[in-house]
Structure formats: C-alpha cells, structure tokens
Length: 548
Image (cartoon, rainbow, N blue to C red; front, side, top):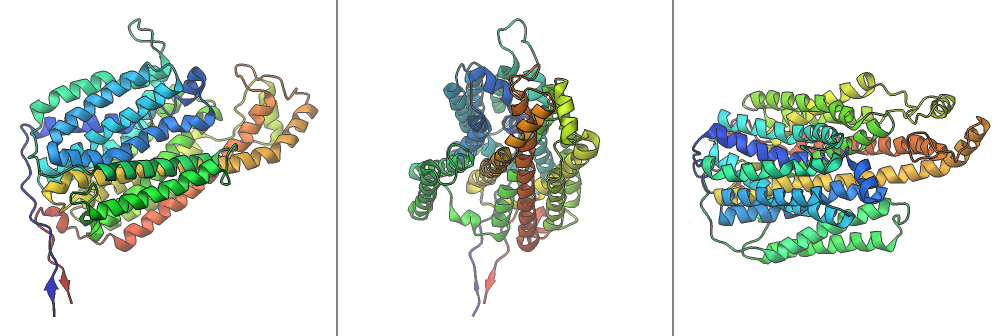
C-alpha cells in the first residue's frame, strides 16, 4: 500500500526589492568583504608575526580563528535572521565586522589581534547567511536567480584571490594620508569604511523579511561552536613539533570536541526550535550539496595558504607580486561561474559540479609535484651570494596553468551547489538553510586548513630531522659558515637551507592530500546529486515521494 511523504510547504513568492540591481551590488560587496578577509591576511602573516612576536605555529590561528568563529556561529546567525529579520541581521553583522576590523588594525599584541579576528567572524556569521537568504527571497527562480547566484558564487571564489592581491598591496604601503598606520594593519582598517557605508545603505535598497516566531537554541549554539573549536585546536596541536599526536592537549581537545558535537546532536534532536533543524538534511540533494561544499573549499583554502607562503618565501616574490600571482584565480572563477550559470538550465547540476571538482583535483595533484630547489650545489651557490631563493619553479610553467584550471573548476562547483543547497527550502528556514551552506564552507575551510597544516608540519619536521646534519656538513665543505646570517634576513645559512628543503616537503604533501579530498567530493557529487535541471527552474514544493 502506497503513502505520500510530507512535502515542504510551498515557498512564498520572492520578496521584492526597491531596486534589484542595487540590492545585488550591496549583497556582493558585503560577501566580498567577509570572504576576502579569510585570505587578506595570508600574505601579511610573516610581517604580523614579526611585528607582534607571534610564533609560526600560532600564525595559522590568524586565518583559522576567523574561519572557525565565522563557521561556528553561522547557524546562529542564520537563525537570528529568520527570527528577527534578515536585513536587520545583515546590518548588525556589517557594523560588528567594521568595529572588529578597527580593533584588529590597531592591535598591539597577539591576544587582541586574535580576539578581533574572532569578533570579525561573529560579524561575518550574522551578515553572510542573511545575504544569501536575501538573494533567495529577492530573485525569482529561473534565469534571474541563476545569474544572481553565479555572481554570488564568483564573488565567493574570487574574493579569496582578491584578498591576496589587496593584502599584498596594502602590506607594502607605508601609510595613508599621514596616518601612523602601515603595512599589515591596513589589511584590517580598509574594512571599516566599507562595512559602515554598506550597513547605512541597506535600508535604502533592501526590504526587511517577515519575522517568524520561535526561540533561540542557546545550548545548541554553545555546544556546536565549542565542539568545532576544540577539534580544530586539537588538530593544530597534533601537528606541532612540541606537542604531536601523543600529547595530552591534542588528544584531550579532540575527545572534548567529539563529545561536545555529540551533545550538540542530542540537543538538536530534543529542543522545539533547534539551531539546526534536521529536516534541512532530509532532502538528499541538499544533504549532498552541504557535504560537497564542506570538503571542496577545505582543499581550496589550504591551496591559498601554502602556495602564498611558497611564492614569497621560496620564490622570493614581494607581497604585492605574490598577490598578483593569484590574479588569474579571480578571472578563472568568474569564467567558471559564468559557464555553469549558462549551463545549469540545460545540463543537470551533477555533471557541471562533478566536472569542476575533477578539474580542481588535477590542479592540486599538479601543485603536489612542485620541486623546491635545484641540485644542492646550485642552492648553496645561490645562498653564498645572499639569496635564499634557490628554487627552479617557474611561475608560468608550474603554477599559472594550474591556478587557472583550479579556479575555473571551482567556479563550476560553486554555482550549481549553491542553487541545489537552498532550493525548495521552506521560507521560514531560508536563513538557516543559507547558514548551513556557509557553515559547511567555512568550517570545512577551518578544519581543512588545520588538517592539512598537521600533514604539512609532520612531513616538514621529518624532513628537517633527516636533512639537517647533511646540510650542515655540505655548507661547511662549500666554505660557508652554517651559523652565518644570510644577508637581508634573520636566518642563518643552515636555517635557510633547512627551510627550503623541509617546507616544500610539507606543502606538497598537503597539496596531495587536498587532491584526494577533492576527488572524494567529486565522487559524492557524481553518485548522490540527482536533482534534474527542470527542478531548479521552479519555486514550488518538492514533488511528492511515493513510498511503497
């Protein structure tokens, strides 16, 4: 005997905006700001570390701390938008982000900077799900929404590369208009006027969503956020030479994180108004999209982190030149997003996203083949002349083609997965649906960077222990004092040669693992993303499911 499963109720007609064009521009500016801040500090990391005396291990928290606070609080931000109005949360998030950026730009110590990064994450967590939900409720299903999502997806991907370019330019500045701020501080301060102006313009171009009744799930927010924080902290500690996988801090933090996430799941299953309604995952298309959007950005964010350090510290690029090295990524992701936007009405989403993930996987495997240096004799000769850049890597041959390949691939991934992730979500859940999507992306990035950094540090430390004695002997035989400082740096020749040999060993293994992560994403998309192209052109309820 057959029965019909309960379908989601019809989605309300999209809320009108006073001006769709201005509304989209404002949303895209806000999205660009919160996305580029995940990478804008990457190129400035060596300068921040030197200025504020932050250790190499703790530097990753400048990137990870933002992504973790952003991802960990996104569900709460999405729920707040559903309950109290998305435009209101959008404005509050932008204002919070601007204030946090001001604190970060003026920070005089590590604690204040990391605290400001966490506060930036909170602001982004309030603004981002509201922005994505506003697109869903403002633009009708079909070509208009597809184009809006294409631009949003392109901004999500290009923002990372724009952040590197902007970070490189700002890091090299001596100051602005006589102000006593310079370099890396400007990478934070630039957000202040942008965030405040965008928040002020929001009431003019965006209409407020209808508030919905419900309660905040505070226990869920606490257990979920602390659980993610504990896991990332444990993974980070496990990769450090002073701790490792056998340390009490690493094991204790990982165990605590798992227990907290279990508690989060229990809380969500029992409260009347959960932070993460399980019905969001009941649809196979949405669940597949969420999982894919968690794994794919993890590999992409790690690529930016390790490649930006490689280009600067081994190839000798200046901050600005390093930023421009990633400029092709911006054009590539826009190209990929445009292609997928035009194809999504003609080709099923899994073919587009599946092809994009395969392209990105090929690029990551190519990065894993990067060779750090020439023959040892050539490296020593270069170092004797005062240069630490003994690499034979050519940007145009070994890096540029694969930045383009990965960027086009990621552009083809973002658009169809964003469309399928929020399609047919109930109107009162559109904020939380957007929050889940952004959460998967940001938490995936934080967990991915922590995991791949652990992989990189393991191979870096192993390589260091292996080559240090031989390099010391080789330098001595070449007539170079191993303890002599390399001109223009604070490294000795031995430290510089060890870094060249060991850093690339770690980075290439991180790229390799990232490539397998992208292949796993591709398999998930090909196997489980079964939504048809015709479904994405409608706003109605899901078709009834017949259960035999």
